[in-house]
Amino acid sequence: MTENIRQMFSKMNDETRNEALLLLKSEFNLESTKYVKKNWIIGGRIPEKNQEKIVLIFQNLLRTQVFRINEIKVQL
Image 1 (tube, rainbow, N blue to C red):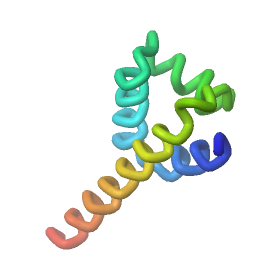
Image 2: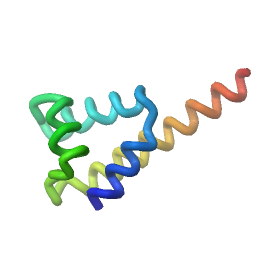
Image 3: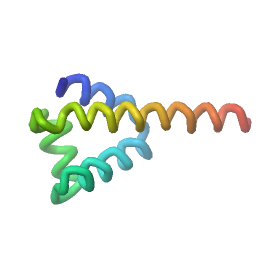
């Protein structure tokens, strides 16, 4: 599941990535977004008990990202 989380994270644009890091920091009471990115995402050391919740969070963020992009295309 860790690899799926990494793949979803790589599909995020910068805005969505920042939002994801802030959400994970808040949701799991972590010390910093740098810790989340370095240890959980890049390092692949996501506690197993948190992985399912992270997948749900990332799926929702990616869905929102797609809606935002589609709105921009429609407005152009």
